[in-house]
Image 1 (cartoon, rainbow, N blue to C red):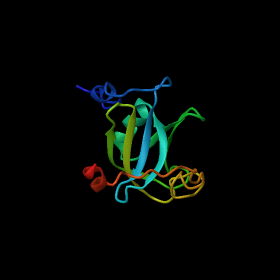
Image 2: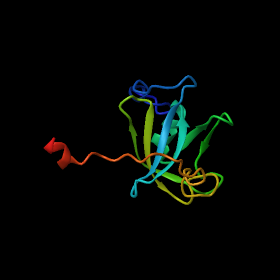
Image 3: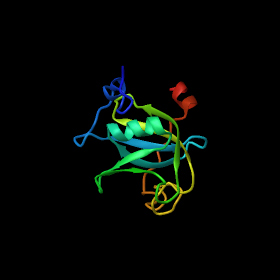
Image 4: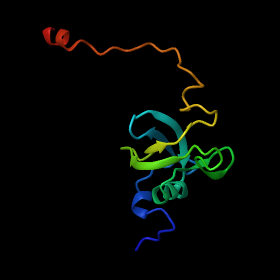
Length: 131
């Protein structure tokens, strides 16, 4: 029987962690599919996220666990958690209350802004068929 105080071994076995024992966690608003932020989780942070209904991260800079919104009030309520095909990234769908970014913006991708990138275009399928 699995100990409820730790991550399920079947889940833990599927994770491909980095050298610090972490996996990336992409956080997405569940209804709009807006990407809010990227955080990091170790086994304990993932266990807390899966069992409490609130998102917990491991802070690489502070070396401690933090639960989104405990200080700011901008909480993330878990709707679902999925693991990618490689086992090294989680997709955490949440109901975000308030700002997701510590800067006070809705997402962590607003302050950094868009980078100059060449926009790719899908080939015209009808043109491809005539070749």
